[in-house]
Image: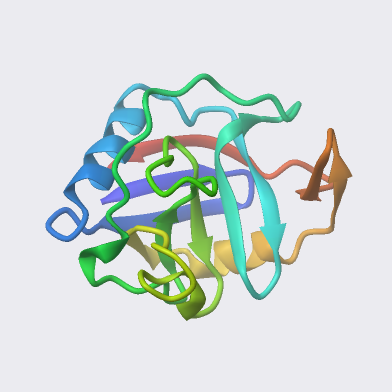
Length: 160
């Protein structure tokens, strides 16, 4: 199990190691390197998702490792409480950023509108924390939209 310790409480996550081995190994390496310490959930869109894992509180991108292959074709769906790798418009561009689905988002699944977003884990405890984060006031900051007005800090992510 993985524990995401945030300024709003803890979120416990189970990795889908068999379905998404590359994404899980990538995420685990960032966890082991303490990469996520002092990052923020920098994009919060109610009734959609919360995204974090790559920006500091001052909205600076952290330097990441190389992008990984997209595993969206693994059969896992973007359901409420699942974690998926964030990416750009390029299919194989995921690095450290991830998002937690606040509702079922089938349009993010493989083969919908495009290749899709690789689901690699699910929340097993702490959806109340996820929902609390989803309810924070947001605005624009440093050229980004949907940024929490008061930063939602990721204090650490660790293997439990």
